[in-house]
Length: 434
Figure 1: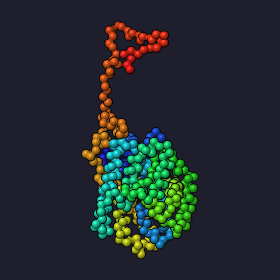
Figure 2: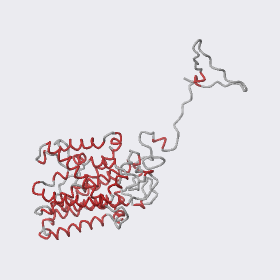
Figure 3: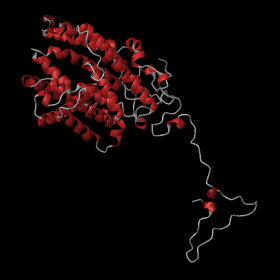
Figure 4: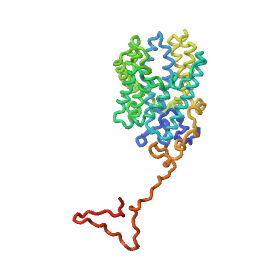
């Protein structure tokens, strides 16, 4: 893709369609705090590093899920990982969505970067499962996202609500209330992944409220040092809790009653999970390098890796490889973990991104208006985009006859306005207008 894209993405910087702004992952100094600007500052290596590491953890979590059976250590690692890896990824997505203002160009980016990939890969996954699972009658169900595809719909819906969270005085408590209400409401539909959309919403809203100085604070030396005993203690707690809990609550895809829990306990678990996720996310971000690393550039390909990794993992599940005797030894599980990390690294590389650019970043200029394609300025929807995008001024009505100034002969001065008797009040004349 040429660097002169009209949507504000510099392809030389490897803009990811799943980033929250037109400009992708950008550095955010104080004078350019709002994301989504078109000036094109360099990408922030810290955010790219965090994106790459979280997407690797996503694949590791998916490979650990079938390996938890009969392994207490794997279950403990799985529970600990699921407390923060998706919350951290969503918080970063929210932070990168701060500049979303429902501008025409941003709406086009939302449709081409999230909705189009969802439709394409939901269709592909249906065909894939017809073959891999030997289920030729599997239906095309676009309202129920398959496997990990729920995140694309969730991110699309979260971004569309971004202007709402901006006008609220206490957006995070409101988002937490929405998450708690969903966790105790069995009637919430699974269509469009609405349960996860609601329960993960606070993390996105939190990301919207963060500023660069917040990320600076978690990278201080004292925080990095404290993160070590906190993470170690959390792993001990997770290991001790394995016989008494399951991993289902960490998926946030069901209400409390569906998990066999009373409603009040579901509300408590939602709030507790949010607190644990914040603590572990701080620990994770404290260890993310802030300088450029060998994997920094791979942070631009997280969406590509996210969409593609589901196929080899699901195929391994269908073939029963995770239940095979060769996957039961701790060294075997370690090798599988390393393979998952290597797979995600490969899927984030530039050649893979370029091969799928026609799906993940389709231009589709014919489908959108000139304003959405970036012709002229891109004003919010409430700012008369048709005229402003073309640089034209709004037509002016001629003044009313009573408001027109009378033409005076040369050399004469304008008469003083008469005063009302006894009050000194100046009466307006026709020259002064209404």
